[in-house]
Length: 409
View 1 (cartoon, helix red, strand yellow):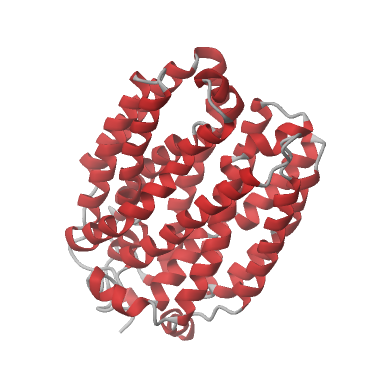
View 2 (cartoon, rainbow, N blue to C red):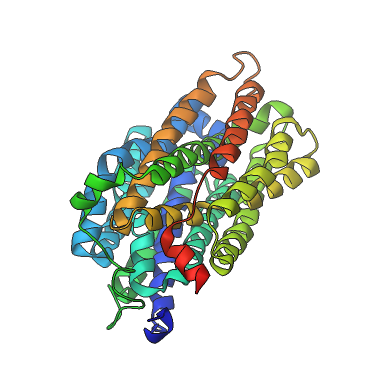
């Protein structure tokens, strides 16, 4: 029996679309302060690190909330789980706007939004499994990554001009009301699952979350992909959080920092479309990851050394297209090699590992920057070594029996 005998419903694109919308606004709220780190520090009379904490706290909260969120997604459904996240995003997004002049209240509201984040992020592979066939799931994940990049691009590119034109408080209020609109759209239009499954039994939803936790650690390939995720996602969080301080010592301003961040993510959008589609078409996961990570190395080198803004942007394009766009393949690989662990659980564990590494990388990058100039060249060279290690680790990944069976057919 082949997948073609199972019906794929057109409404899957609506469900995926509204999920992409709520995912995007969550990312916008996360990255808001990154391109204006220095200016925000002056506004609140705090240090760069305290502004960085407004991004870092998301990762700390994720470590606490991720497993309960995954359990709710796996047992109550993705629509219930994501709706919880959407409501938290809307309520605390508004709160952060209307109390935007007070750093302490902004931090409290940010923590509230961060609690909702894993309810949104951990549902990607669950939604893909319920609505899409096995050979379309990495592509569906690619579109979610597209939404993630769009959300971060909005935060990177739009925050500096909004801040310069309207000030901090009004900027946060605007983002707060947008989050309300996005939450309403998701709650109204999202559906839990189609009337009939999109694939044969055993290829869709699987064991309960707690049962999955008992077996996932025994899967060597999943342990390996967690290490790849640890390095890759940690680098992503570190670079995006400190994008303005990274280039500030070379004379670039907040508008240029926002532009660079947006360019990296625009390139990531194209990569997040092309790489997962290529992976689905060729029925290959591991080798695709290896080549994408390897080809991103020149981009990181340019980010470290470029003094020309044009060269910096070109480096950002390479880094974004090849390295910041392969998350959907990582998540789908993890879901395939851990059967019968549920998608929400494998997805949540991978993101949790990435968030933990984000905390380490963000603190590490701030800790080892030059005390006099603020330069992060030395620690970025360390990241370059980590990236090369990730190329080797990705070369050791072996595709699951599930995708190999599809390749054979």
